[in-house]
Length: 140
Image 1 (cartoon, rainbow, N blue to C red):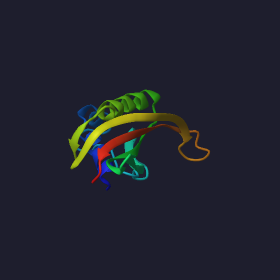
Image 2: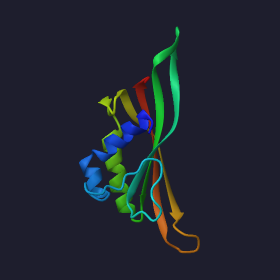
Image 3: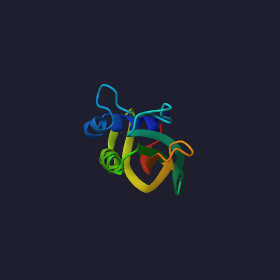
Image 4: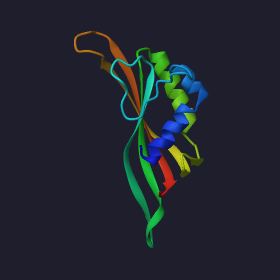
């Protein structure tokens, strides 16, 4: 796992309110990159989508920005909102050292809400909130 993804996973899996909403401490449904097929909802899937280095007048700086996407899946819109709110609270505005990485700040950049059909023709739907967070950090 990349360090920025490890930061997101560590923050999310350590946030008690979120863990309680997605299965409890014995089996939280938070998986990096991909959820198991048939996973019980609601659940959370963080993944790293890109990273860019920052530059200053002298050239490359010691800072970078990683973009981590956090997908929240739920069959119930109220569950989607509760889990999404907990994800935002856990991550947005965080700064400090976690998972061996010095984080200057985490900023929520974007949220996209969609409704997907679970299986074609089933009529059953899954709600999704795709959040993109910018993790500003010192290079590894």
